[in-house]
Image (cartoon, rainbow, N blue to C red):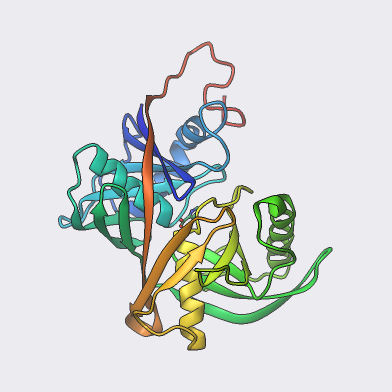
Length: 311
Ligand code: PYC
């Protein structure tokens, strides 16, 4: 299996460019379900230790169904499959440019949750035109063990997010263990209280929102489904944040919003009005290719699909 690794503002993406599972040519969402049902060992083979690690997001490059799309992408992580992934889309665009398969300019990529736009600005910079995003519920209050009552919004940005009103501590790299623990407890409280997305979908991402640092509009900590934190400001999380700001009337269409991650990297985002009360976010960030590799499976390996993967 041939993979190319990149990182987008610190968050890693591993793109499978060949040798991935054959999922046919149906809609990407059906292909994602087939991947999950029949080839989950491929997901763990690619991402689990010793080949990968918990922060890594995988992307399978596939043929799109829409003739005007440059690529299809199915995203996955150490816990399962994602709807969309903003940093991963930027990473995939920069990787395809590295391979000479994508020229600077505007393109469309197909994902399981819809078609996204990609504007490749230069060899490291891309803007993702994300799927329609919206706030589903405002000011939801949950009682969280060890934290007390926590208030936040539920929003869709290509994945389901709970975005807190405030942070239990400063959003700093030194506080990552504390923030991780807090976000996990918040997620458990949401599940316990039956708080879900509009479609009943699990809220599997938690964004702890902190005050604006100098030169940015907000700094946040994002807990990903498998327990790792997002090193980037999170493309779908930034989209969810814009949806909440737009719903509050706190950010005008077209105005820039600089979102900073817990490690200090930044995305710049904007939105336009979308259909049915949604917004159409665009998120700009930078990525760098870090490795080109061929992943091998030795029949004698006691962990053929990675540690924790099916034997
Ligand atoms: O950038 O959308 C994103 C993302 C989701 C999970 C990790 N990164």
